[in-house]
Image (cartoon, rainbow, N blue to C red; front, side, top):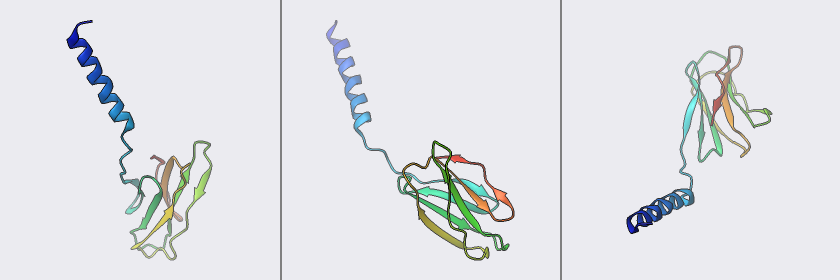
Length: 112
């Protein structure tokens, strides 16, 4: 094998090893939207941030589910008056989330 090919092969293997060893970068995902209400996954998928942004008397909360489709329901906001946000712990098993508005419905499920 020519020396150039060996050097290229070693460079590719080294680059792939560096990518595999790099830690996952944290990001926030705000994709579950229902009207003006929304839910975001934060802090490396360890928290879910839910906001009721409509003063309509309908409470808002998030749902999340795991691979087995077990659904966990977050807490309702207290009065549906809007401007209320809360952060809840999101278990490592959660893979999808959505935001729901009482008496109105839910957003589509969003894959984390």
